[in-house]
Amino acid sequence: MTDMTEQMKKNFEEIKERIDEHKDDFEGVKDSAEKIAGKLKDAKEGWESARAEKGDKNEIAKDEETHQTH
Image (cartoon, rainbow, N blue to C red; front, top):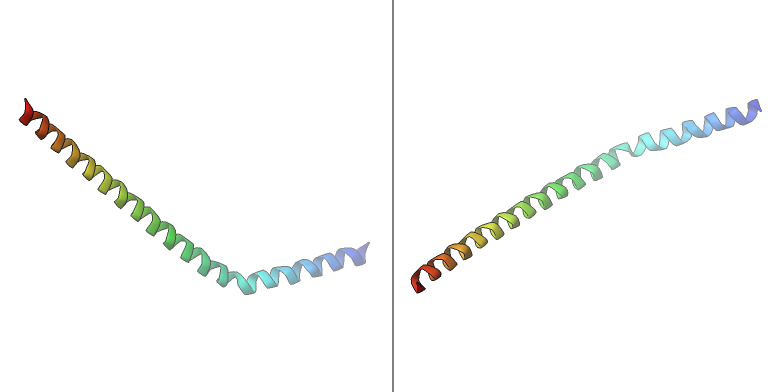
């Protein structure tokens, strides 16, 4: 039983070392993903603002048109 526990500890340490070696790689991916998410959020907010502005312009145009016909 002790041999098996020792082997498990050894395997765990090897896995931990491999993860630590590649930790920086994951941080780079995480940073890139966060940048992309930020750009998507900005694009969505810009699109929503443009749509709202366009909606306001359409509303004003309708009001002016209605006012002119009455």
